[in-house]
Length: 261
Ligand code: GDP
Ligand code: MG
Image (cartoon, rainbow, N blue to C red; front, side, top):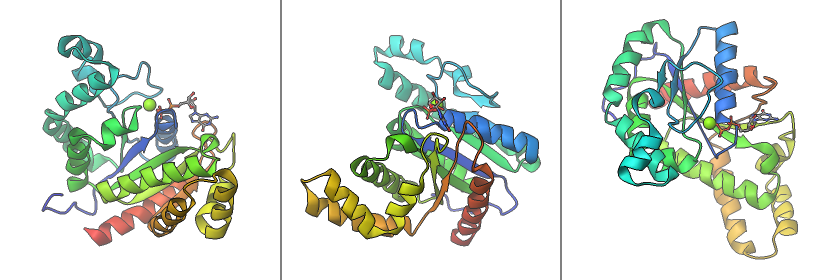
């Protein structure tokens, strides 16, 4: 973390992080459209070198700097290695990206950032940490952790997704919003219930898994503490439902951020 504190009148960074297919890019499109029509246009950064087509026009696109297929060939890598190496190469130039962002900052309220499809490429790499820290050192920054709600309805999957989110919270130490996406398909009510009613979740777990129950119970308790530290919203990136609520959570998160820094 940097020694200088971000200024309070700076734009807010929204980092979209989540499992592959959770809907990060679609959520970015929704944020972009919402901010264009209701607030000030955001500054948009794409950090996914492997995305084929983006449903929004980024101000900064990693694909303009590195060609991940060429990187794969040149360094003899598979797809994941190619994406990671592309992100590393891009990160060596991130000071230039920051210069661009800093120049535009006085006219901005939001900087929105899309991350690579595979979550660990961003969350468990030095590059991801460098980019996150560099942005958070200058701008109030919030993690929007996108969850594929329809694919998280089993208690064991839910718990592993929450543990993953928990690890990112502790790694980034940034204000955190759990964004239950795709509520046009499945409502996130079950998740709210599990997060607020410890016993309801334990009961669901017992029905779901007969093994490892002690370990599961202990993890439930860890998660209870985790839930106290975050905000939860349900959205549909496709229909736009819940987006106002999301921005409400962002405002609260920024306040928290200002108290910490
Ligand atoms: P990413 O890998 O996290 O960037 O995920 P994408 O944004 O590419 O979305 C993955 C898939 O989920 C695509 O087929 C999207 O159309 C779909 N998707 C994303 N958000 C929603 C949503 O809110 N509702 C529904 N029904 N589908 C969604
Ligand atoms: Mg994507």
